[in-house]
Length: 141
Image (tube, rainbow, N blue to C red; front, side, top):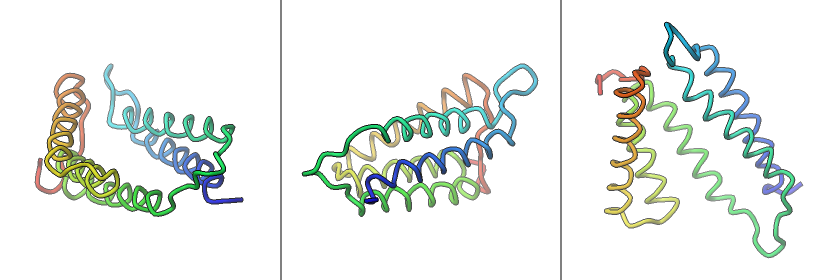
């Protein structure tokens, strides 16, 4: 089995593990979404997308880019570590800016602007509008 055929199974397993962990954070509390709802839904989406991609046939002329796959895995791992210490806003911005610049090869100005816009939008939606508590980290950001 090639790396391209093996990756969806690994991602589905990671998604199921993340969903189980998010479920332990509680999905709903006191009549409103709790801290685990967003990660739970994101993990289910990742699992479903991974399982759906298993059925697709991989083109012969386009092998999987193992370097990019490893870079995404490293970035996600770093995001998880930073989330507890730096908080949601800082870790999300760094994750998005890093992935867009280093992996997706966007110009750094455009990647920074996009990362900042997405981070502020996600934070506003969940923390402000939906009152879902997001990790603030040691710096309370």
